[in-house]
Structures are given as C-alpha cells and as structure tokens.
Length: 433
Image (cartoon, rainbow, N blue to C red):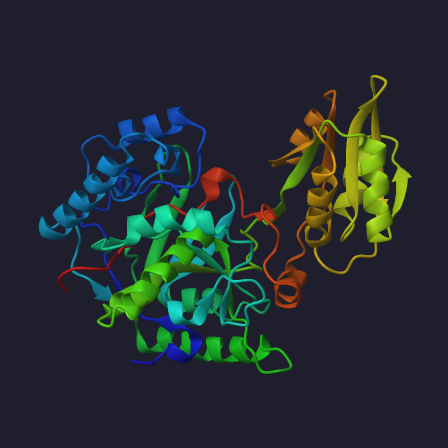
C-alpha cells in the first residue's frame, strides 16, 4: 500500500455503523444551531432509542449547561458501549469518497482521510503543510480538548480545503471508487439532503490519489519550497484541540500514535457544490458617514452613492473588494459603495479597521450576519449601518492565507447550516486496539 506521510495523510481504519439507517445515525456538526434548542429537541425525537452519533458528540448549545460534565461522561459511556456491543462493523483500512446532495440540490464531493497533526499548525503565519484559515481563539480550545482527551472513538466534522482547479484529487479518486458498490447510501434527517460513500482502497484508487497529491504538493509550494496543501474550512477549533491533545500525549513520553492523526473530509475549493459565501457585518450606534470616511481614508478607497439596493448588491457582487453600506438617514434608506483596489480578500483589510473604529466609539457594537437579505433588513433599522461584503474569490483564497496568514474571525461560510458536515464515519482513538 502507498505511503502518504509526505502529504501529511494516513489511510485510516474506518468504523461505520452496522445498521445503515443514516437518518437516525447522522446528525449535523455540533457547532450549528447554537441558539436553537427546538432544532436539537427535534433531533433527539428523530433519533429516539436508536444508535446515533448524537450520543457521541456534545452539541455546542449545551456547552454552558449545568449538566455538561454528566453529558461528557455519557458520551464516554456511549462510545465504549458502541465498541463493545457490535454497533460498528469491523474497522476497514480505507479512505471514503463521499457525495453529499444538500436540500438545495447542490452536490458536494469529499474524501475522508486521516491527517498528521505534526503537519498542522493553527498559529498565525504558519508555513506548515496544513494551515488554519481563520483566526483561532485559544480560549475555545480547552472544552474541545476535554471532549477529545481519552475518548475511545473519534467522530469528526472537520473539513479541509484543497486548492485543485483541475479536479485531480477528490473527483478523479471518486470516479475510481464509484466503480464498486457504495458503503452507505441514504437520506439525512430534518430535510438535510442525501449522502453516499464509497471505499477508496483499491490499488488503482490509491495510485490515483497518490499521484494527484504529488502534483498538488508541487503546484502549491511557494518560492522557498514550502508546500501549502490543505486549509481548514470547517472545524478549525476542533482540529486545534486535536493538536493540543496530541502535543500532550507526545510530551508525556509514551504517546498513543492514533492520537497523532485526526479524521477529516477533504473538499476541493473549486467543487461546484461548495458554496463559499462572505459573512457580512452590522455596526450599531455609529455615524455611518464617519465610518465610511474612516474606511475610505485607510483603504485608499472612493465612496460613491448607489441609487437602490439592487444596484448596490450587483456592484458589490461583481467586484473583488468593494464594500457596500446600507443605513437610514432622516428616515430614508441610503446606499453607498466603497470602491477599492485591494488585491487581498476585503475582510483581511476591513476587519482590523472596524475593530479600531469601534474601539474609539463609546457605544458602538458589531454583529456578523449571513445573507444579503439580512444586510438590507438590518440597514433599514435605526442606529444600524450594515456592511455588504463581496464574494470570497476561490482563486485568491489560498494565496491570501499564504501571504497574510489566517483570515480574521467570521470571514466566510461554507454553505448553509443544513449543508454542514453530518457525523458519520468514526475511528478508534484511545483505549484498547
């Protein structure tokens, strides 16, 4: 079997549920619907008494619950029980090619593999093979570290992006894998679409995977020879926690080598089924004209007024780094656009400036919003200035991170909440082999 160490990868031993009722086994990533208790109540009702990944994860809506410790204890109990009571099939050494059809009709393709945490670094301006895409908040790591520490089973929602405009890796490996019957195939709960997966373990499939990675590593290396192969798309703090757990194991002198790896789904940033949307901003209790003036002066931009919401939205969407402003003045909605010549992603330059502006404004506040409709809705409220950001350019994404380091917090979103990764594949982590 090919060795994938030079690419920061390992072929994992995959655990799949014996009962392939995916509608009860699979639940959405724990960091979704964090303000929606009703959603998670419906998830629990859908699962009932059936074996489910719901019992192996801690939805973040419960992070501040007084019974969090007992929830963590129950997760450990469920993991051990599932291993001991035949809930899983026997582990298979393989990757998995995944096709996920969302409720919106989009099809996203992925490749499940294990990454080497020695090749990953979330710290700013890292030149590691695998890098963070957004600023990592160190205070968020301990609770996730506590969940992973000594856990007998790993079940991930981490998604890595690969810079592959020629579709060499995921798509070509998938073509080979689909020559065989799927490992699983079924609908997901709560009208979240459909998922299918095929084993990637034949000699031909692994050969294609190896040669694709060779080409991508070479093409994605800088002038100093530093390769940038994978960027964390979702689950950045979970991966940082996995790294922290491995560091502890290694430093203790008798590491469990399984902890050195983390299960992830690799997705091509150029996959047509991957929506890559900006996260917009709203600033409360500020003078909109002062804000526009501050940003234009510091970005070398030019402010122009747009006639209506459609003209503003179209102009921003068709730009690379223009910013829209929506606010009320004397009861009338105003629309302005800041034209810029920025080459990097707009949020990289704008967010630090917003932080500076807000720090000098006594009552100003900021929130992060999804969707253009919400921008115009909030911009119609008193004391609110909504900022419309341009689309995230896929062709400059890796270049921006390589040049400027991890993006500011809340820079982009990979699809809607129901399109996020659902828990499915597992891997043994700590404990008996």
